[in-house]
Length: 270
Ligand SMILES: NC(=O)c1ccc[n+]([C@@H]2O[C@H](COP(=O)([O-])OP(=O)(O)OC[C@H]3O[C@@H](n4cnc5c(N)ncnc54)[C@H](O)[C@@H]3O)[C@@H](O)[C@H]2O)c1
Image (tube, rainbow, N blue to C red; front, side, top):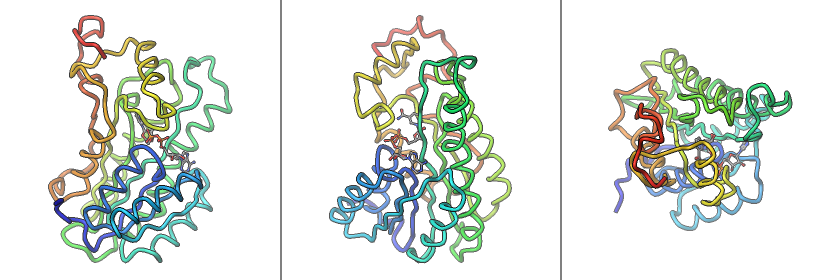
């Protein structure tokens, strides 16, 4: 039995059809939340919605929305507040990782713009349009919790994915500013995943391990990251256990980003 600490609360998850978003959505629903799932992948969104509804009996509302388009985000926000009794948790998570392998000089303008529009502008738009109502909700002691998805690439710039890295460092900055602006009503934090098999790696462990090898990545905790590793921290940030934490970024990467030891010195298979 899981503790239903989200009973009577609403949660909105962007990128909710796949990967971290889908898994977090299921865990939120198991803890009693009603959900709005936002994604651009219509087929996957429908499948995820059906699965979570069947497994948990919670209300799950799918909304197709491109988070990089302000008109779509405004419309999505309006519908979300109509569908949910409140919006207590916002998991602002949608993101993409195009143009891997092109250096900061070689990356083209199209890939640069696409990456920034979805990863940075998209997460900014979603918090910009949803947070004003979240902060006015009559829920004590906090009226809401926002969790963004950054990346360890945003902490330690990865030359293989330059636009992605800079967009994710922007998320860490965004979180600091949002946290100050929305205090003391709403907490705003980020989770920074390392390497975890999701849609971003075409759901293939081989593809991900190849990417890690290309970057000579070594993981001090000597295993691959899982989706659960991330969702456990997201659940913590959605729970009252984190009520005194705002403006922070939580790397969840087996020690890759912070270890400060050259990768080649580590005894690690991954
Ligand atoms: N998987 C990893 O190892 C890893 C590492 C660091 C950061 N991240 C970040 O995690 C977040 C979630 O990605 P994931 O790994 O679960 O991958 P994923 O591809 O499984 O999920 C991302 C979801 O976002 C949706 N999406 C993409 N563009 C969108 C848009 N414009 N509007 C709305 N939805 C859109 C996709 O359709 C997909 O369902 C992303 O922000 C990603 O950058 C992932």
